[in-house]
Length: 98
Image 1: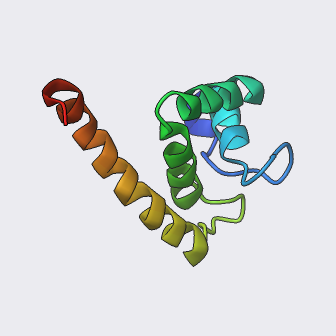
Image 2: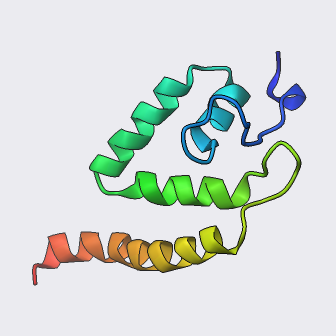
Image 3: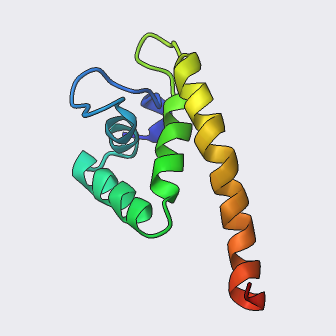
């Protein structure tokens, strides 16, 4: 089955939180556990897993076509902007010290 026949949506069944990992796993035809483990690894090494999950939650519609509401968008802005600034400044801090 090709990816074009499977929409990228957050399902209601098989989800743990918002269904982002389950939706990605269903879209790519893999086990959701693989996506969840990858998310945990990205979260532990740099924290980007949380940002990726919030972006997925905000961008991916649920099975009815509705996207996430304002609380998720606000959380994305409150967490995402400072985190991206941190990621951009990290190489300079490592290269040039204090």
